[in-house]
Length: 236
Image: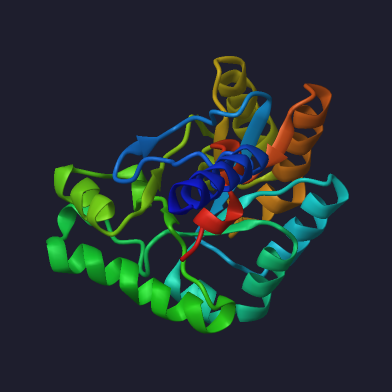
């Protein structure tokens, strides 16, 4: 009788596993530069939230697009309502450290402090903390990656860098940043780096990128989603 019961339980678990979608595990402590889900692209925005972020959220909403926001400590602390709106509208909130320090210049405890200090800001607003991060300046070394592995962070870099911070006027944002986006997209890039703290990024570049994404039949989504990982794994 016990054997039959055990077989029935095993069968039930097996059936449940078949019925449930598979959840892909994204590796931690390893630099990731590209989406893995076909026909997806991840627009990401660093250093906010800022006064321009609500306008960016409006633009993303008009296009039915989701994005990932790598936020900083003071900016997050000063804009809790924007953080909540990001989450409510299906975007991903991820860590860009508390102060934007170059992590390789810090020791173990300094790296940990940059991460946990930001967590302490985000948790009271969202009730969770991010499991995805982007190192400031995209700089890592072996120690940084080991700490991220120990603390279970997915480390996200980029394969499309718009360099929008260098091109903040009406002409340069189109002639340089948007052209960089096109060139690197054509070369196979799929995780896009921009900044929601800059006016011309929000007022011009974001919509141009979204129009191009739509024209190519790509799906603009979060980094977590474009890596095939369920939303439940983006936070802890």
